[in-house]
Length: 333
Image 1 (cartoon, rainbow, N blue to C red):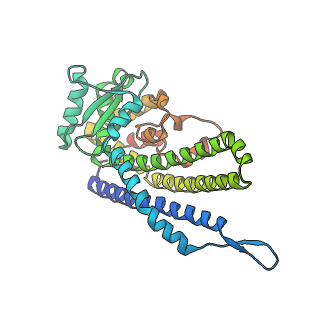
Image 2: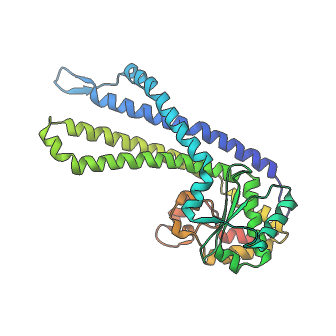
Image 3: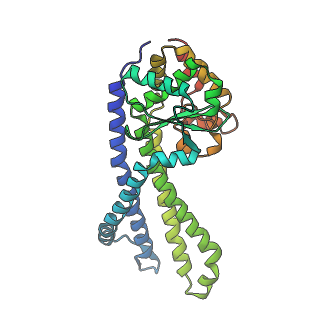
């Protein structure tokens, strides 16, 4: 079975990256408007004839405030995104503890990477290694200057040349298909919303534990108003986070099957890649990193192999297809 459709996959991933770039600011700005609208609704109103207070939304006031706030939010997020986007390789390397692997340190790996790159006509990426006796690998980067293939020491020690070629071929296919650019865009978007949520949660925590005495000595309702505002902010952040997670899940798990097919074609031995996946799944590494955003880039997600009460639910939102299914397909080539 020949690996086909690489140009279609590249176009598809480029389109998804563009849609993510468009949808994320829209989601974020939409949540800002909802936040302002809720604050306005709960702070405005009138008393009806029965003496009950009726909340009322002043949409003109909300839109005016939004018009003033939106450019500031857009500029801040744009700067944040640009910094994260262009420094992603360094941040990912620091998170997993990866170090550059020099040719003189392991010419075997460099020869395999070089031969595979020559076979598919692509520029050779950087090669990094993580000191981990278990097995795993992933690709990262957004352009030819940052494309990187990262492997664990366990992978280098416990796979033979054909198996290692299959794994590296898989990661090179992710780079060729622009999967890495798409995933990194998703990682940054989810990370921004996660940070905002964390800040709001921290503000609520501080208000509950350290603001109580001040609130009791101030006007009644002032502390409650602050809490209401922060809770509304938390709800809006959580909703925005949910939508950004949906955009990440929308990135098809088919990318792993496509990368398997490309790796099998590059190394010329689908059974070798199937054997490598079986070995990796029996002892997957990089689980210590505990970064779900980065783990979705691994050739095998270590947490998704765990069985338990939440296994079925987790499998529904898994970023990787079943390893058994991937192996079965490779063995049918």
